[in-house]
Length: 240
Image 1: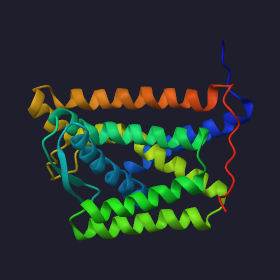
Image 2 (image 1 turned 90 degrees about the vertical axis):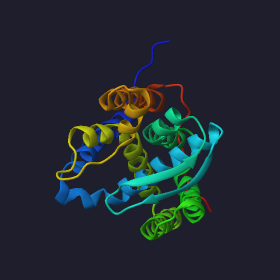
Image 3 (image 1 turned 60 degrees about the vertical axis):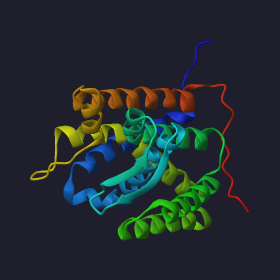
């Protein structure tokens, strides 16, 4: 059966695409980076937690992780399948972003999702973060998410979730910028460098793979969310 885009959804789709371009642009403008800093910080937490989850799912253990003001982070784990654990930061972020956006658009209300995100982030920070900035930043982000769930209007909650999800979906593109445009005067060891050491394939190969994965998944997600006319209407009432 041929599918067509719902006319009422086209403006939202266009806004989402423009928002994606804006986020990518703001990443590359240092003096405007503060506008997306909280969202990128949230992405760093998801990235490091994805490494830990991959370790657990492949038979290892998640020990701890740290998050720093420059948006870098590091996760420590034992055991597990190293190639999967090393790939999980970007791949896990993209999958989580896709699940968050699709789940919100097709099933779960914004207040409920924000509340669950806030409680989960706060709990995981207390369990696994082992540096002062990481603990403080994680708890502040968790509190902000819970506050947004309780006090913000439904339209504002909807767009907050979409920006959070987009930030995670675009994380693969961020890996491209990190490898091709490293910060002047610094030498950062990235997940792509780790995989290059394990597989003897160049770091750029892994970046290109993450980029392709992000692009394909994002496109499929947009089709599922907005181009399927048989999808049920979305209703996001405020939870009592």
